[in-house]
Amino acid sequence: MTVYHAGSRALQDRLGVRELADHVGRSIGPGIKPVAAAFLERQPLLIAGAADPATGTVWASPLTGEPGFARATGPHTVSVAARPGPADPLATALTSPGTPVGTLTLDPRTRRRMRLNGRIRPSVRGIAIDADRVFSNCPKYLQKRESYEVVPDRAPGPARHGTELTGDQAAFVAAADTFFLATVHSGGADASHRGGNPGFVEVVSPRELAWRDYPGNSMFLTLGNLAADPRAGLLFLDWTHGTALRLTGEARTDIAADGTRTVRFTPREVIETPAAVPLRWSAPLYSPANPVPAR
Image (cartoon, rainbow, N blue to C red):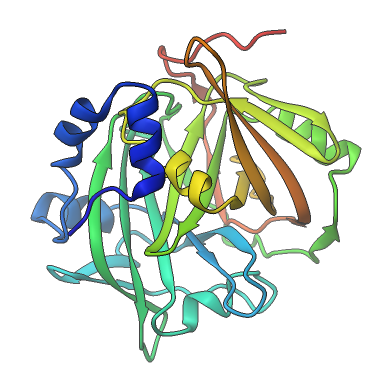
């Protein structure tokens, strides 16, 4: 299995971290180890990222259920007892066998996260995934939320569609401490996490967002994907009221002379769904690793 493709390698070489990336990349494997399976089965939330096979647009979407709704059914397979609703932009992708999909399971209570990438396989109920890349990430920039509760009478409201951010949506993004980022490349799809203190995502205009790429594990999987294919999907969640704000568009990475990186994202379509997630989380305790956003 090749851990890195040319896009990631080019960034690692430009920033002089290839040796470190090779070391960290040894954690990526094709199998779901028992500790990973146990972690997955304890979570009520899973983020999926993929490209719509009809339009090619890339989206990130939340899937939820009682803990155990997502579980390993073998060393290389995952079953998810949930399906995206018919209005979800990933409804086709997540039910089409062979579609590359990236997933991220995140536990704010323990500040742990796990990524599992693979392909959709046939399933009579929910979603099934053949996994080919499984690995954990460090807790950097992940906000801690002590607990959650299920809101049983919460049901998704009508989705609001647009091609740029409204004023309220821009304020939502500017106040966010977390978002999820779906990217693709010729060999698959990936879903990753971005976090920081509120304000770490800058709303440059209704047609442009920007954020600093904080130092991480030096693998540059996400930025490598964007270097090879600029399509991307963003997901912002309201951790109290369950609103899901999804954006699809293109992203590019600007690299300064000192190696600092800024990602600039141009949305092409925006979907806001009220009460999309039936979970209410407690207030965040911001990660001590979060830089203070520039004002």
